[in-house]
Image (tube, rainbow over the protein chains, first blue to last red):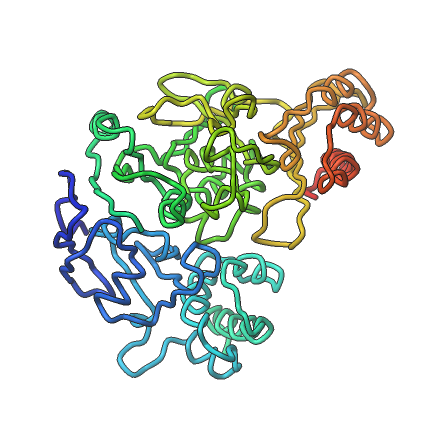
Length: 171
Length: 298
């Protein structure tokens, strides 16, 4: 759904009102064009689940979905995300009912410090939807954009396997 | 981050006008390099023209067995397009082994061609670097990958990436405000079983030490068509023409592959930290060609 008429005119460098749809809610946020989607989420919408690790597209801790695809919020300008559907880790649970991937991460102790975890989970849910979770090799390859400083990788893979197998009709 | 202005182009003409208004304007596609370099203070861009609404994201079959790839097609989408997988498996593999899935979901194909060197001295904004400031005299040894450009002006891929010469900061022949609209990949008999090999320090999400794309057509044991290109060995993607010449008309066996690889690297000029690539590149070429003959990706 197109939410707004795109910014055909030149805007900035001062702030302008930018419509953003995040987790199904419409917001209008005053932003300068240089503000990243990550900073808009964290600093302007108080959605601090998406983490700022490297801020240069390397670590994956800021992974969110834009129009259903996993992307990096740190390299996305907030203005460029206007008119598109953004989903963050805060949009994953159904009220107090955690998403199966969130539950699996807890059950498999798939984190230590937890800083990369929101990005890992946002990536992992898409990984299964994309059909890239068939083997451990595939999981390793297609999760390589999410770095875990604590090296919880074996447990992350176990969590992903659990959700994959249950989604596939088992259990 | 320096202040920016922003606008969304409604069409190609609109985009060209918007970028043409100032030398400090730039097109914004996936943003994976552009936003990063602006934040690092390396790019001097002051106005971004968002071209993501332009209808340039399609991938279409060509009658000659090739494919047309729209400038805004995303790397992940192109890698999984059935006709690309069937007609150019090496391109699909090269894309899938690039970056991470998040970056491949964002990055456009034209932006990929224009990706700037990943050398630390370009990116830190402090070290002397003749890729950023002409004449400061560092040696940029890294390279970028290629698939093949085209568009309103048609540029051959061989002419698209420039050797440093006296203007190391100029990496491609596009004029300011010139927009890549598509990439033409012509049909090639050898391409349907082409392979791509990427040798790197880390198994995934890493640039190549050496990469090889190899396409070979063989009739009765004799090489009748061959395309061979190397990445990571020069300042531009390296078409291995000496090796191609050595292979064409000869036997498609490992001894021939070794000779051809040696012929290609015979003229290599090495420096202290990259001398290992001479042997590595030859082994990678042989391995890619052997795998090609066995009909499987390395």
